[in-house]
Length: 212
Image 1 (cartoon, rainbow, N blue to C red):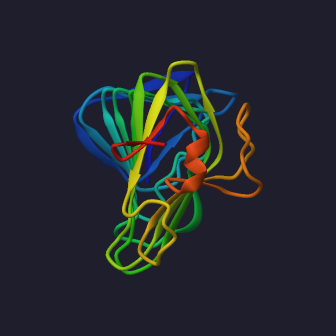
Image 2: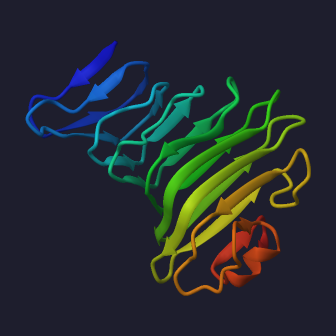
């Protein structure tokens, strides 16, 4: 069912712990809904259609099942917070979880499915400030992949890429891929595999505890 339909340009601010299995909707006449999570852990299990920004400010948001997504949200910001993709219950193949996302001391984590390979996608990954982390955890005997359309970085921002045997290309490994050509970096043609040898061109990146 519908959780909320805005009647004005509205920001829905959430705290505590809750699961949203319905839609958070834009209203008629151009009213736009935005979502801010400031505390606790919120879970979204359906593909949301609101077009405003999503702002995680100290709170945690989990996109669960095979359909939990913020793909219509104009931008996602993660400040001192964690955005988790939980594909553990349902396998996912080339499903876009969210569009462009910006991290400021933020964390993105993908937890894969134990019975099937998992492949989730997102828009442009931006590191705006401080040190952020992107982690992909494979499930049991299967691989997990998180693909971004591109990568940008503000001066001074750093990142740690982590995961299950990240970038090794084995049947049970995790992968973080960038499909676009990153500005200012001599990216190879095709996918850029973070955690593999490609990461050597990124002096601001750590893989585990080792400078790339």
